[in-house]
Image (cartoon, rainbow, N blue to C red; front, side):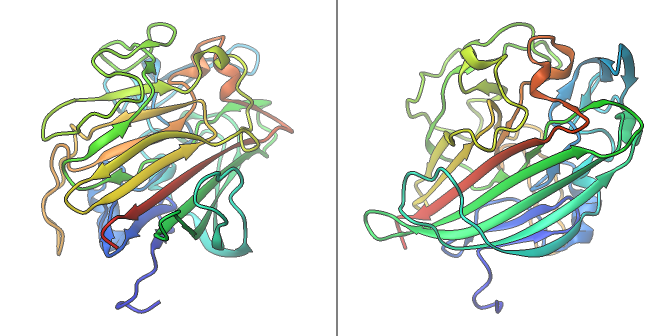
Length: 346
């Protein structure tokens, strides 16, 4: 693909990062022009594949795995562990991209048949003890890119993401896994984001304090505006609270649920996030702080928002949620995410 006609999706081996999602001529995700700049400046995790355990683990410790053994983790978010530790999977160099042919994206109900479907795979081996996590695991992410046609004839760009993790070493019988993507959707003011309103109430460190409840200040699936300063959100929303203890370890055969839809009036861009996961972190970018580097200007607070499909926060340390994330020998962890975007101006 020439520079005049760049590929709509671009990836990097570092962190299996999504570097670019082009809707028309606009790259809607935050990032950097080179891999070296991600290595030196990506404190906001732009585009990274997050693991071994996404989001926060309370008191930087897995309380009990492998017959009651506890595992200390890196405390890199106050007293808690965040996004796999100091050097989580988003900071590791993956193998790939490896072409894996043409694939479908199951469960797409809108936009008709997927055209294209070209897929690439990235793989990573995470050894026993890395960042404190027990057991050697092998993980893969497959990106599938294609286009759908809307009822109005517009091209809808589609990116499917499929995760798979297996415990392959003999060191332990079980470990914890929770994988997501941390793309930050850029452009400052979005209208009409829609989300469900069940969320996990949390303490000051972002650790859940109870069962899902209604989110204050937002009406379920009703449009609201992400403005320059408000609303300030960094919370885990739940797709169906009644299924909290019934989430399979491998959700890939579960239906895709539309988690967030958004519209950017200046560019007329629509963006949607769907997933098979039971929850998602919605983060409006309060802590983004990246200086100007090379051809990219400074990025500050609210220069992007994140939708991170995942399992419940700190699930490994909550008995009724832990089956969502505990991976045993012979089992498979899996999940899927889909991004869809188009512009009314095209």
